[in-house]
Every structure is written in C-alpha cells, then in structure tokens.
Length: 143
Image (cartoon, rainbow, N blue to C red):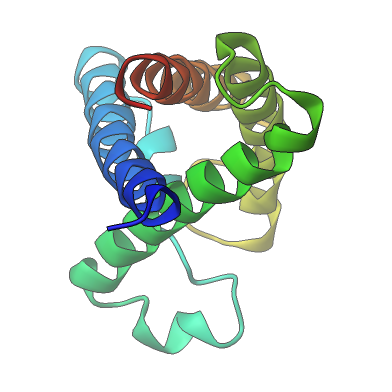
C-alpha cells in the first residue's frame, strides 16, 4: 500500500479515536454539570437535507464521526503547504476556534442548549480544544 493511502487510513483512525474522546469528554461534562452541549455533536435538525433522518440516533452518531474524520483529513492536508501538518498547535487552534464559532449554529435549532448559554459554549469549546490536542498528539506519534 502506498504511503499516501497509509497516511490517509491513519488520519481516518485518528479522526475516529478523537471523535470517541470528544464524545466522552462531552458526556463527562454533562454528567458533572448537567450541561447539554454534547447534544450538538449529534444534532442535524438544522440541516435541510439531513434533518429528515435526525430522529434516528444512529444517524447522529454517523454524522459526528463523519464530521470529525473529515475535519482531521482536510486540516492535515491543508497544513502540508505550510509544513505544519505534524505540529500540535495548529490542530488545537483550529479545532478550538472552529468549535467556538460553530457553536452558534445552535441558534438554528430548538434543541438545547441555547445559543446564548455561556456555560454550554464554554463546555463545547473546551471539548473541541481536547479534540484538537488529541488529533495533534496522535498525528505526532502515528504519522
């Protein structure tokens, strides 16, 4: 198998493992604080095409994994021209900032949490920071 394919498969694995870590962190936060930010990981009811399947839990899980895996693969290849694909901080920065901004998509849905819930925004952003750390760390040791 060529090195491109090996790297691509490693990135898929890194995205999947990091998706599990993100889901776990968000579930722990919910158990400790009763903060419902973890719902957003699986929520698709604000997306016109996908919302027809949003009532099935498995589609939310698939959505979460697909989003995590695709974001890892895309960011890795976007960082190559800058020589930063094996550096930790870009993953932390992009996933933390991206999560912080994307949280406000919650304004498009009636599903909790509310877009102006600071505690939920902070929990969501913190979880995505951990996701960035996880992705960057696994890339540094596996690729």
